[in-house]
Picture 1 (cartoon, rainbow, N blue to C red):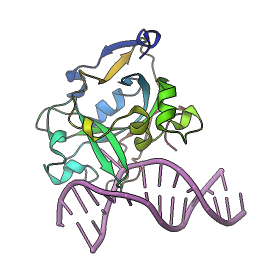
Picture 2 (picture 1 turned 90 degrees about the vertical axis):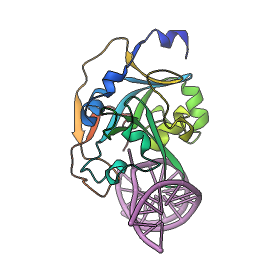
Picture 3 (picture 1 turned 180 degrees about the horizontal axis):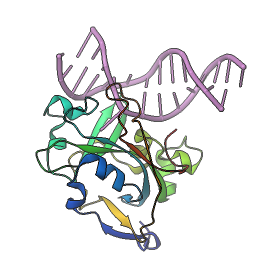
Length: 197
DNA sequence: GGTAGGATGGGCT
DNA sequence: GCCCATCCTACCC
């Protein structure tokens, strides 16, 4: 992080922010800033995975070694391997003991773009650096070693922007799932060129 | 502009 | 053994 960029950021989101239902957290994360080391990006696309009856959620089939963190206290990272090659970053929501998380799908890069380009050499434009869950973790340097990390403190955090702007939110169906595909649990900043697809 | 198919490995039945 | 909360390339308009 450069000093200039730090000036653009507000406080770290506290645990109470995450201790709500998954869809509310997914919606409210839009416009917030994911920070990891020198890299940072505005969250422009999220999906809620509330668990319970939502069969698209990993946690829907109960507590397993992999989904343990999703059942734990809110404000922690859930990172898993998908398709043997890519990693996806989620933020745990809901009270401790209740499953639920939010998948971060796309960022608008605001700091450390050169570092992101090193990590994603095939990305031609800034719009391509973090426009997808697998691209996002690559650009931000997030791996399964971050699984369980507390995102209310430490090197990986989410901050409010210095000036909170009202954003127009679009709601859509989630991407790449088989079950419960019609639920309106995908949230985007309307018109952002940094969203996936 | 569009899409079909392959890469690749862990989780769970 | 099957199923993935994906991405990239090749190929075709």
